[in-house]
View 1 (tube, rainbow, N blue to C red):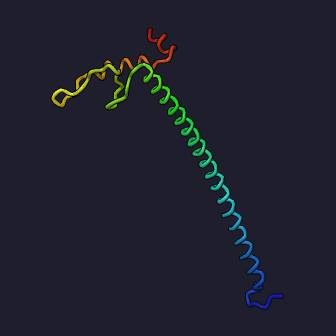
View 2 (view 1 turned 90 degrees about the vertical axis):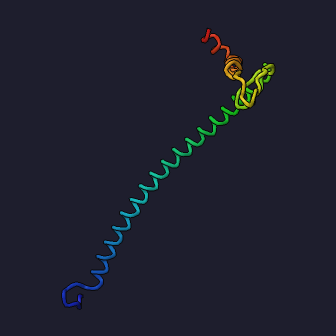
Length: 122
């Protein structure tokens, strides 16, 4: 029984407000769930990329170590950012570097080649 003048009981308006709020809450939860799923997917992609980069970095480190060992075994050394043969006589004349880098770099590149790469070059 409604005692309010307009014919709407306070409990009816409270129920309507409660239903409206429940619907808004469900909609907000649905949007949050969609965003969370989207973020989870993005994070999974980032994680996969990070793992790939770490694996590639480890591969490159291993290749760099192998290259250094191979070059060391053939008598080359890394100085001034260039691989030089141990017998390289390049130095500084009047504070100007002699230009051996091209020869030493080419020789080092040849030494570093795999047998397959060497066959292709021939």
